[in-house]
Amino acid sequence: MPNIPQDLSYTTDHEYVRLSPDGIAQIGITDFAQGELGDIVYVELPRVGTKFAARDVFGTVEAVKAVSELFCPIAGEVTAINERLDKEPALVNSDPYGAGWMLKVRAADPAARDSLISPAEYAKHIGG
Amino acid sequence: MALAGDRHASSLAPLTQVTPRWAVLVTPPLSGADNMALDHALMLRAARTGEATLRIYTWRTPTLSFGRHEAAIAMYDRAAIEAEGLAVVRRPTGGRAVLHDDEITYSVTAPLSAEHPGSSSGGAPGVARRAHARALYTAINHLLLQGLARLGVAAEIASGDSAATRPRSPGTGPCFDAASEGELVVGGRKLIGSAQWREDGAVLQHGSMLISSHRARLAALSARGLPVPAIPIPTAALRELLPRVPSPGEVAAAIGAVLDDALATAGAPAARVIPPGDETDAMTAAMSAALRDRYEDEAWTWRR
Image (cartoon, rainbow over all chains, first blue to last red; front, side):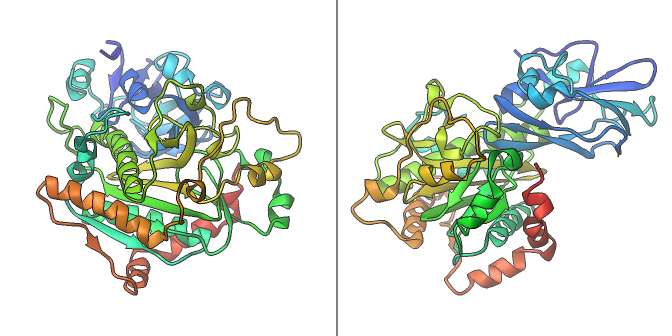
């Protein structure tokens, strides 16, 4: 059974969001998603300062031979990207919720969490 | 989900599960940018119309194609590529460089529905797309395997446990230097390399069937000082495997026949064959100038 931490919010596209009180959201893909994709060999991330609307494509992830789009779970501006992924993309496989995080976004509206789902809803979504 | 090594007809089931409507298209040799733009356009068309397309094609001039994220600037010697008279294009799909010369390329473009058979929630778009795309990858490899078997090629599906199938970054050597799990090999030598691009609602998978091996030529194009891959595996080529090299049309007919069998098993009509002469209409209708411009753009080709 994939790991679904209880303290995070999720999307149906398999991104997770760790919202902190200062309005910064740390974003990555779920343990289920990394397992489905298989060995990740490249993560393409946006520049710091890029602004996204919710559900915008923020990057791509390449597993062995397959490239998939990544969707930004919330609207906001990118304040940091995980530069370690450039050299160590497999961190997404080994530690998706920790060292394998992808970007940090300053939420345009910290209260806007309409498109996010709870751990229980995500577990149901992936058939758990 | 079908597993690698599963040789039963049910391994083709994902093909008809994504859509019962298929077309087969054989196009004349095109430029690199046109080939990539057409594959991309067919993918957008699949999302729009729900019809999947199996396309078999060749290239107008010998062309080196880079994977979407491949570090081509560091990996390949641009002057050597130009001196060889090779055209260059960057694919929308992942993987590593392929030399398209004396080879036959296939593409499959298919819609990805929002239904996920394994989900208790009944409709989970993201899961469905990723899970279907993975099942489709395996099914397409089985389709190619069975199609080539009709032409007399005894290939098999690479398993994931050999040294040759270890994952590597998109910047470490040509595509045919390693077989990925699920790809077609002959006696451990890679015959077909494939790659996917998954977008909202559709998937493109294309790959290259070698008629002749290009390992030495590709190695000569590598940037100076680049280490030779540690565990290179030899490539397989149709010219060595068959008494006569099949034409793109014959390859399309053989693979199309397997596809039709799978469609018949699912109670679906046979694939619509886009007749020779009509392919130009299909191409112009599908391809936008914007897509062609994108794949002609040097900034895209040499983006990394």
